[in-house]
Length: 195
Image (cartoon, rainbow, N blue to C red; front, side, top):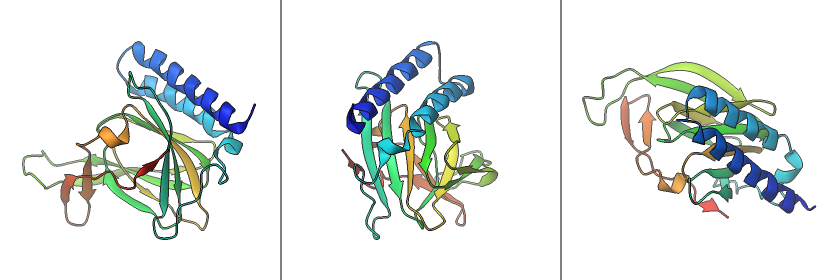
């Protein structure tokens, strides 16, 4: 079996397993941890996510996002993010659950809680609650309202699997936060997804 065939088969297994888990009830932390575990198993197969099949981004772009698999019925969507050192994504939520598992390299995620009462449009106060170094062997699960930021440090390109309850391209209500200014706004999609 080729890498492409193995990758496709394993991605479809992840979708099926995740749909089964979610059929039991809402995506609570326990169910998301099970999905995160299934995603981690896929991320351990580093040979399936090579630069040959998924090229590094240009120096200017810093990120390539590839859609790997999607279940049209449920919306479950799996991506591979390939990011260069220096890439930063400000604090944001997803409005759907998300799981991230490292294939290669380190991605620093900072997690936040929102402190303000949301009564003033465009204003927000966040407090950092944790730092998670995502590297091969670990993964992160987040609920729809969880807030995180991403920084790619070091000197190597990273490859991480991102798995969402809905396609990123449909998430029009995501919020991006500016910690220094104490503000928030609707977040754009960022880089265009490649197929």
